[in-house]
Amino acid sequence: MFRRLLTCKNKKGQILNYITLIYTLMIVSIIFITMYLVLSQYITGFNAANVCGTDGDCERTGVNFLRFYTLYNYYIVIFMVTGIIAIGLTSFKLAADTAFFILSFILAPVLGFISYLFNFVFAQVVSNVAYDTVRGIFPRTILICTNLHWVALVAFAVGSITLFAKKREGQYV
Image (cartoon, rainbow, N blue to C red; front, side, top):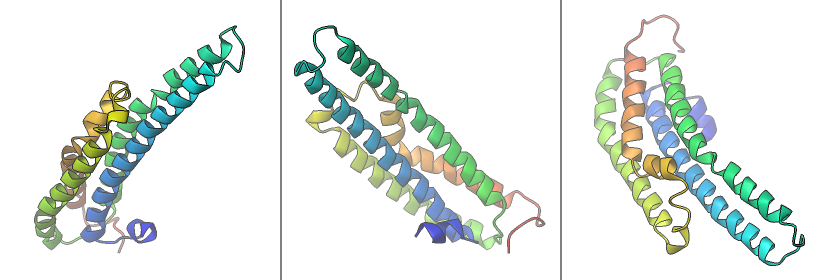
């Protein structure tokens, strides 16, 4: 499937790139949040077992590691911006006729519906009681993933503008 996405030569493949961006954002965000939850419980259990003794080095190391892990909140923002820029760059080299612009507007509500479904799935996963302690640590990630329909709209606008606002030379055939 990914090979087909990378070798797409028309607007249909570009619509699949938009879906891939929002799907990947959702999956990576769920993985980051779940891993923080698992690692924090692991470090808490490790410290409660008092394996390292009473000097507190293990506890400080665990706290510093979890503090470092909160940087993934910013990585999601960087990943989203990079994905939108990549969609713009790949759209610039696609060879598409103007008829695909109409196809884009027909497929835009489908893209919105799919991204809304991803919003719903993410909200259901994160609304679990086990994630209560983690939701405040990843505010940017939760904001992005509960508004994937806006991310899809921005990706759609950037992709459509760069696809149809270019000269005819320099395109892949």
